[in-house]
View 1 (tube, rainbow, N blue to C red):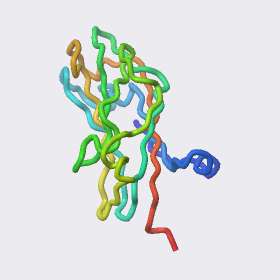
View 2 (cartoon, rainbow, N blue to C red):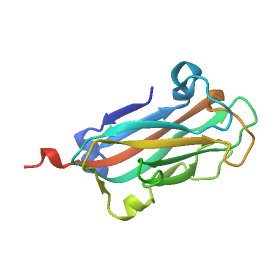
View 3 (tube, rainbow, N blue to C red):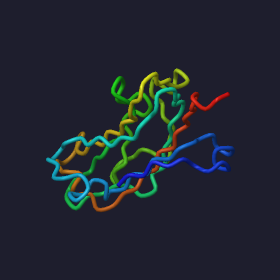
Length: 159
């Protein structure tokens, strides 16, 4: 399943990102996600605690996603229940896509300097196949890995 981990102190000092969320094609397999209909968006999430501020999200496409059929389109957004693309808006991560393999979240939350969570919430990653191409299901993905990097400040532990 997708992995959400805190990065090491040396990584924190070097680039400012404190957490990493790793998603692979296997997260969309029938064994892990169940049977999903063609053209259905799938949302993967990880928790954000009350008192945390998420200021930045970046991504690195390790391996472009591809499927066993004729699909040519897989986009991802990142946000939360209030703004589904508040951190990252529509990045094409399919092998046939044209977006760069690395990028920076340019959503409204990032532009505002981040979002403070007064209550527990989730960061939502919405993966949409077939936004403009041939219909397929994410169950058909045969390759792909993306790493999302987040800068999360935990105000609960500050003195």
